[in-house]
Length: 392
Image (cartoon, rainbow, N blue to C red; front, side, top):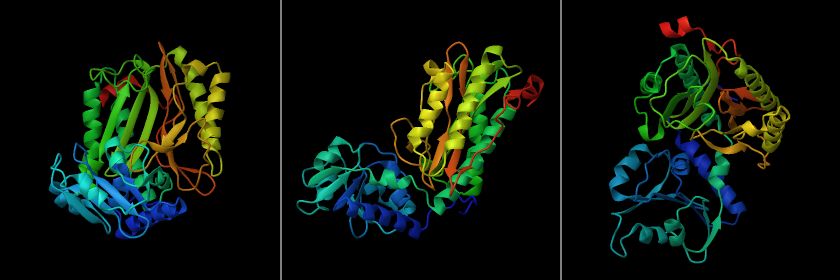
């Protein structure tokens, strides 16, 4: 397995192999065509990232032959500048449009009568109702995206190494009173400068960098980032978050950290979170059901009396987004496979105390997992001396 970081766009052969895998699955499911609307799936098969407004972008994949991409006419130069691979562009002038000139008219021309057509679970109703033939719900592309190619592994390694450096900067810069705006500006600026330095043709529509923290007064509420006036506080637990898509590939690294001191009531939850993390890391091997990993972690937390402070699964997939399938989740009875990339991030959230979560991005290898992100993990390493933090 190649473990060298890379940041260049996919080759035509890489895209062709992805399309062929989709078409092989289509034949297994007896599908004549497959309709993709999800921008992430379109990016995966074309290298074209777009922000969808009211004008639809629809990729139509035949069971044999090249994909056809229905796009607004004004976007044709943009598509050509970014797309990779053999793709037929089907343009329509505008939306809305007179009868006979709408996107749906061009779209329906691509199908024969009485076909079986795969549609994504998240297909919008306006596209679903215009799709002719027997419509079959199927998430072939999402499923294929779970297993990474050698090229994708290189892209993920690059993103994860940069995310690790960004997170190191966050911790080194931390001090009581540091604002969310100050931290985010510094860390996001570092990431964007490095991305542009490595690849001047970076695609901003395939780049999203979240760099935030939650102080102990908020960290019990893991998805609450609504207060832009948040500041770091003496003590903890703070939770740091770097979750990013870096020119097309995701990475995540998070830590529970303290400034100056560790409150007594935070020590035991931190230890329990760390043991849950250890259980997940030990179990995450090829062939193990992802549901079993999550269940084992959750049962440990429950036995420790922490069941009421469990708010989420043990982890999620990483790829052309920073949050996707597969999932370490109870009820998700799919085995881990070589080439899957996921986060491991069991957490506990106690109002009045705070949140406890480390997250790392890992790759499933031949027999074990491979760490793609890095950073301090022990409570002593993550207790930042005030004189050191304030001086940065």
